[in-house]
Image (cartoon, rainbow, N blue to C red; front, top):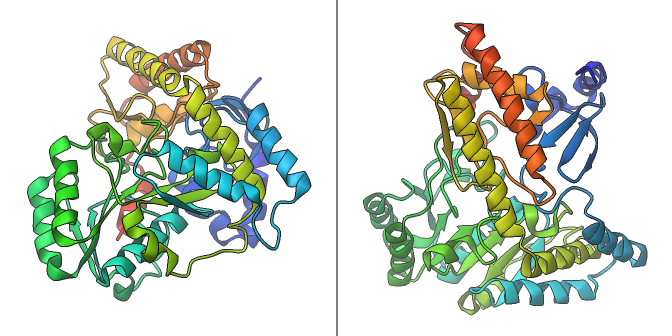
Length: 424
């Protein structure tokens, strides 16, 4: 089938009339290569179809929620069955208690759970609880880390006041001296330290936490009576069947979760240790849809697969197959790739590409060959992918590299320059 985007273009034109800029947030493709679709028709397993009928092996997995494949029969059946009984009711169903029990069994540091809708909800609750627990204001965060889209953490400066960002001190991820300096700056007002499970900032190479950094973050919180918060929204259950920092032997006081915990159904969570239970019980946080039962039923089905299947080993193996193949393919064309992050959550960027032009050209060529990669955001594996899907991606990459080599000098990507100017 020949790739086309006529329906997508028409929808974008209609959207511009009724939606600011035609789209907002992470799916605003004004920052993506030119031909990336903005609207999609359906998704199943490892595949995504846009409104023009083009099919892609989707390595974004819905920006992370798709862990077991789109439209997973068992998970979706649990959702639909609960939906038919009652979903958003005057109060929650039994599934809320069952899910809290399941999450605290699965995650070793957790004694209690609270549920919400988005990762931003969970990280904002963590911030409130840390301040309530300590009766202090200052939080320490890694410079460049993403913790959501509320005014206190959104990556863009538009619409944000200095007051929204007050009482924040920044450090460099994995830099113990920088972390210690930030804690000294916070002084006696330290409420908590936020940390990502890995350094998964956009546009830059990913890093796993060093044990020294992770342990020191825990020690500093203990010394100051502050709370250690792991933002596991993006990586939760993709790196481990426990909190991601279990891999470095460090237990947080709070951890925020979302994306994959219900395989795409709308729910997020904040988990905590007993030390923070009273502080969690005495904040006010809620939402009209936070107690919806159907996503909780889907999350219970997802957690069962997390506990009982080899999903983790499978996604790692798929990611390693892709990484090894891309190294070989790019080497044949004399082009370097930087592949960083865990194999199941790879960031793939072209070396010697300061303006992003090579990456945008290459990703656009992949798209037109049925492979949905992202030029500057980490990607994801899911268990519905097959070795054949990986081989298809490698063949598409080979073809795209040939086109890139033949293209000659490329103009800088103006849309990236615009975005960098907006980041505060």
